[in-house]
Image (cartoon, rainbow, N blue to C red; front, side, top):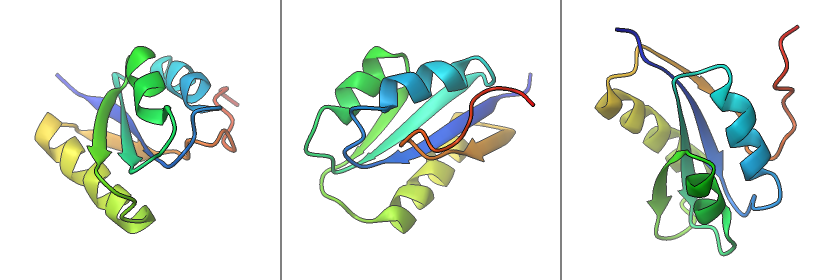
Length: 95
């Protein structure tokens, strides 16, 4: 069975994360949010929306969050992964 995930590095994105997780769930099997040391409710809102959340204890930067996305996808046995920004700049509708 194939597993496709959407992975999102996120830092202080509590205002958009729920919408992004819910939107991505329509297109993939699992959504992974890597909370890169946020000081707001990003991780809690992502988890409440159904995302698998991995948390960095402190802000390690975008590169480290991307590394964690790839490591998590590998650990989950994902066959495909798309990286999407958590701030809402990407459209979640099919074109």
